[in-house]
Image (cartoon, rainbow, N blue to C red; front, top):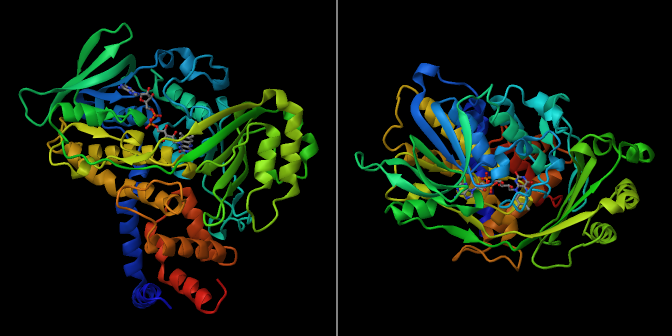
Length: 545
Ligand SMILES: Cc1cc2nc3c(=O)[nH]c(=O)nc-3n(C[C@H](O)[C@H](O)[C@H](O)COP(=O)(O)OP(=O)(O)OC[C@H]3O[C@@H](n4cnc5c(N)ncnc54)[C@H](O)[C@@H]3O)c2cc1C
């Protein structure tokens, strides 16, 4: 046994003894782990409004009207007298930006290259949206975005997942099935609903700078934006939220005013590439596919199959889902520069050629083959993902009291892990928690911005760190300077892989993996529950793993 493994086994032994002597200690640690490193408890508090008389006078200015902007605007509506979204893309303020049939939009989302790329959403995201918008399910149905308890067929190296954990008694967490375009458009329709949220307004413009408050040092007085006509306008703000996504514009705005001079952006490039395919099938398409499993077939939105690689053996992945209004979204994803499919036949060959430990079911290929019938609907978009980046504002010496950044404006990761929306919900939930904690203040208190970043950072850290486990071993990945695929990362990959194998027979391991995938009541330390650690090492020692 290597010294690392003996140390790990010794730690597991001590933790095991602790657990046996006092399960209450473990329960306490677990609660703290959820509290500190996830936004699960924060998310549960979303959607409760302050009394009108205790709302903060003034305007919460949200820079960017995409996922982070819309969700944050909705959160701010519960706490501020006025919320203003400033978004450059003019068509988003028209009816077209809120259509129930989002696919009919003629305008293009100029700054969001992934508008038509496959997106998956954790149950955590659905729960947050259902808390924020009481009519979410109803409006989702109007958009044909599906809300249900379907489990997905998520295969690593082609190995079929175990049945969903018995813990739920069949009452699995609800989740969302729909396209990015569909969900973003639905969110806009919900958040900009004047009857439900009369104080939220969206204007067309590009924020260019921030205005310091001459009377209160350390505070910002407002933002400057350029409107549609090119005219520069100034808007006073009580709180400024950077939701500019990939532009990550806040760092420049702060730097111009002398703030966050010591912001050291961390960045690495997983060199991920995507081929995003969209096709459209009529309802009758499914008639001859009755041999497919129920959760993978049918005209409503839902999963078909997720094929993730064992990163040591394969650098490619594939996802196939059904989206609203009969659209099928398929991706071929890869690290590095392998040949990517450009036609349906090449996509089928791509899926066939993936490294798998168990043969993929025939029904998958029957389904893919049948797509030839609608080949005239085939569209393809290739995306070379930009580097991942983290802006650790919490480490800066000097920050204004009333500025925050969330969503991709704060952290951008390899999208293969599908965590972008969950990251947004995490940031917006942290904001809501802090605004609740300070609900007796009718102004944004001193150091609010710093408190926000301190609260958000440890909850964003898992989003930033865990992809490295799987990105760093790829030879094409360019890591954060000074970092590399450490022995610890290698051990963690082995450990996760062992839990995944164990999950096929063991309910505890199955539940840990399932909860992790839902991002609900999942504590990071669940993976290191003493009993689970013992099972993994026992299997290893006895040669089962
Ligand atoms: C190929 C691909 C696949 C993905 N798949 C998934 C997935 O499966 N699941 C998932 O959860 N996530 C996924 N993501 C990530 C997800 O799309 C992003 O995390 C999400 O869009 C972030 O939302 P945001 O609002 O923070 O930023 P964005 O969506 O980038 O929006 C930023 C907004 O700010 C506006 N803006 C920019 N500059 C200014 C300015 N100066 N002033 C005012 N407004 C400005 C822009 O016009 C835009 O509307 C994927 C990403 C990619 C690239």
